[in-house]
Amino acid sequence: MEPAPTPPAGCPSYTSPAGVFYTCFHQDGSDWTKFVGTLKRLEKRLVRDTTCDDFLTSAGTSMGTIINDLLHPASTFTLAGTIIKLSSLTQLAGTEGDVTGQTAIIINSTAFLQQNQSTNYLTILHELAHLFNVIPTEGPSTSSTDNDNTVLTNCSKTIGVNP
Image (cartoon, rainbow, N blue to C red; front, side):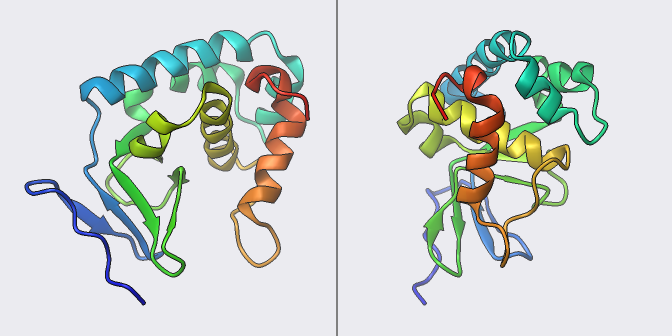
């Protein structure tokens, strides 16, 4: 196995008990500003998509909670400069519930800045679906791709793609 990547000087890093490596947790800067703008646009699309609303609230979370998370992201989201699953050295777009002491959802800002709007919407909705227990944790029986497909099937209008 290759060693974990080295973060930039002065940038804190963290390896979670699940074996995911993170650098540079933050909620500021130009990437945070872009991320917040994306969440606001996503919220406007989501409120017009009853299929996606029904999917995200199917385990009991209210739409008000989801809207609050999107419009007041500092309580739910943090950005990280890097998120890498060490067992496969795979870059992850986001994680949910992996880092004690951080917000529930952490988004890879490097990946976020490189992706198009639809992919970013999918990443955010995927992580929210984990948070609200409407898709399972990835593991032996369910892959991240399986979960992406479930989100795409239920939220294609919000994401802006055909399933």
